[in-house]
Length: 191
Length: 191
Image (cartoon, rainbow over all chains, first blue to last red; front, side):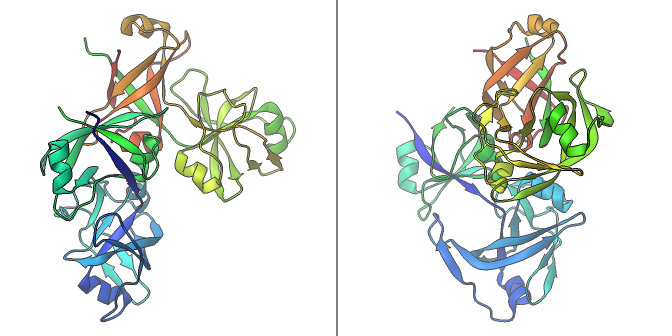
């Protein structure tokens, strides 16, 4: 049985806490949705911020909504070098001990003492997909891509939840290294 | 038997023909070596040029020496998107039908009608390494990296020659996707 699923390439982005949103954009500010993302409830916003690290700045980093408990910035390894922070590979939400940066909004700035991660590659799937693929939340699998740049990604975390949509998430560097584009089908390999 | 070899991440760079070097830097100009590269006879130069594509410019692209028969520009897929040219995966030297760009030097500019490639991942090895690894020039192998971002690169071309030094070459995006740094050891897998 072929276990195919679509892949998506995440560009650098930031999730904001309510408190940091207030500071950066002004008290009581509401995010402006421009596009729903594939995961239910998640959306891209019109708002952008600049990120300032010890070595460099990255301008125009897209804000994703809705607001979260903690501000989290997801960058590529190249971005981390440009900012001058350690590229720390982490699962989303796991930000203890990660580098901080300065976030610059139109209203004010925030000095974060943590929150910059290079997101670990992962698969979102709905509980029904989990049954179909016969994997459960927390499983580690491999994923194979096709074409001239085909790779097998090892150490891929599976996240299964009732409000997830089936999709593998990699960053731009991982996607380009594998020669895949948004929506390309990749193959899950269990071992 | 473990078949280990070092990996190196190539940043964007340009190889110049004698004719284009003359145009860009002035008649009879000689490249200034700053550093020998791992492959015998190849070196990084002090000289840099700007690359202008239909959508964007990349400034300060390093020239590698010595001069070659044809000018060739090696970029990442992200670079190709920034320039606005098709990211065409090719082996070095195979530039027929690849996109052109404008190259801007301190003296003059050159409009190339071809020469921009995204280099296909490959392994250089000396003939003695070829015997030790039991592979021959032109073989296709796989290569596995270690660590949290471990991947298996498929479709890796082996190039065996008397003046090559043992090393796998990937671009920055491939290296970062695999979580490797210059000099890290990777494992050759034959199939």
